Image (cartoon, rainbow, N blue to C red; front, side, top):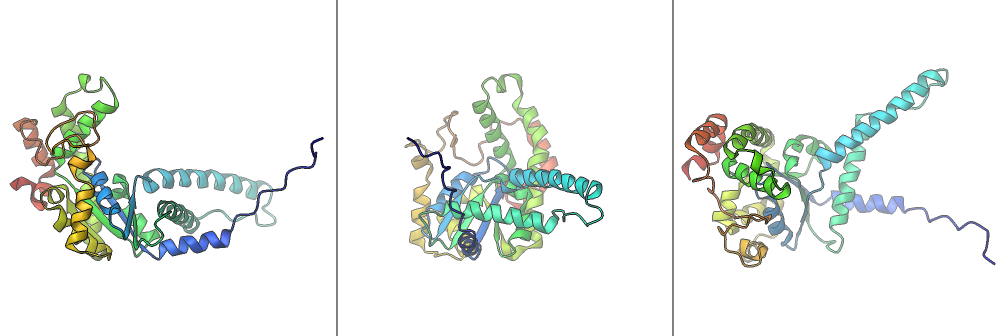
Amino acid sequence: MTDPSPAPPAPVADWAGRQAALAAVAARQLFFIGASPRSGTTWLQLMLDAHPDISCRGEAHFGDSFALALRKAAAEHNKLLDHKNRLLLSEVGGYPLLGLPELRHLLATAVLLGLERQTVGRPHCRAVGEKTPDNVRWFAELRQLFPQARFILLVRDPRDVLISAWHLNARLSPGWAETRDLQVFVCEKIPIVERNIRVGQAFGDAWPAQFLCLSYEALTDAPEATLLRLFDFLGVSATPELAASCAAAATFERLTGGRARGEEAAGSHFRKGVAGGWRGVLTEETNRYVVEKAGWMLARYGWGER
């Protein structure tokens, strides 16, 4: 005969212990990578994660997804509390609503929970970071949550960014490209790329000590020297041997199973792996439009000279 008594309740979580673990993560060098999509953040992430002192994963979408969902849930909850406070509890004061400090605390806790999980098996990493391209629009809010964090902006020639985005859309949605024109697509999307980088660079101009801007082209031309700058910025071991090892861990050939850089595979996340591929693809008219809309980027990051 089976025992009709209910099963014992699950043990209460070790709240204090978990909070201590999150505090330990927060004490490390946190960092966030942002960019326009298709700027090479996955490649950068893999090189960083190959460093023994760094854990870098992506994409968590803390800002552009979780924070928005959290705000919506809090607004609904506050609406319920406010209704009951006014309708039933006005004489006794009701219950406090969730305010901005509480929302920030909840979001910071969620971020730390994610960063803690990504370090499982690597408890001694000195720097812990995450790369979601849309972080670029959330750098300021992430800094409010973590004032000592570091922020990395990865930039890439917007013409190459948009050609890569075109091929990604075509890969993810068969038939998508058949009803669209590449030149029109570039002209329509260049303001979005320009705005992302302008927001990210404005953050860097305001907080230069916590900000580093790297370019896809620099990673392509001089990966080891660029990684050494990044390692110094994150406060981890920075030796030529480590830079060479991390660069070797994420070469284009290794990531694609032996395909040479420049050899195109339309169905791969790592399609071609070259800088300046927009030449011979964009018309002169489209290129002039890009220069008109994003000329400051071309001048600031040296793309007009390539």
